[in-house]
Image (cartoon, rainbow, N blue to C red; front, side, top):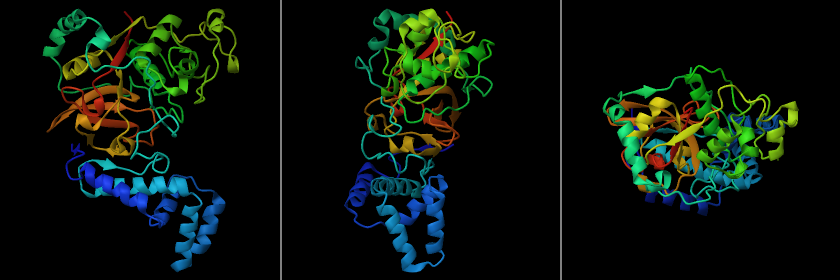
Length: 389
């Protein structure tokens, strides 16, 4: 297994130069590549393809001009594509051992800047109180940290080198779409996994119920997983996605409906029709910055964690292990599901399930190097997992 190391051959300064060169470019050097990209992504109208076929078979200057006109008509998206095309191509050309790919974000998200809530597929978590990387934010008093360390001491001493929850426990990779509901997806997936571990039958719980009804969070504007779990505990579970389908936008949810079990869209009942086994009663935090505690916590079930998804290496990840310095990340802004860990010649790495669909990454998964401290992509600062007691 090879690493995906940001500084191995391509340094940050050279990537900035690429961005500047592209920003200053007045031509349409990658117009044909943009057309091919959209065709591969099935984003071209059939009439556009038909018109192009007439020009392209003639070749020469006429075909080149047709590509340029095509790019001009999509100026904004083309310039984003051009910038990302250069970044991805440059990175992959150095044989870093990590593969990046052109995916659905390539002409939509400008990864040379921080993502925000106005961009498609943005996932920033809106946080009421600042998340401090110190232990005290999550545990309040040092005594709680000591208690957990004592509680898991024997587990710490006997951790397996490899531990991966398999497809019999994990839910299928989901797609949150253009809604910042990553927090809801990672929460439901963690509960679904816990249910299967405890021999409950579940297909898919309702993320939409969390988006609409977990009022401590902000729907498609983001949220926090422990607040979502608070809602599940208070509501004594969740109903199924079949009864309250995901629509990738926030809808209204009357709190009086939860008590009365009143009708909502598609004739489902909230509160009185919860999936058996979804009624978790508690949750537990990871100890921030503690690789060994995260490994031990995984023995209980998959963990919903947060990381920094601003990196273009994460955004366009295809295969390999992401291993960039922690100082390359500034904030956690995306929730995912930690499903296990494995080893290679360079040490431990995390196996993570994302919620951007199976067409992202390695069939919806990503591998991230496990290190002591904040973790790669700040992935070891905030994590929580549901429990029955």
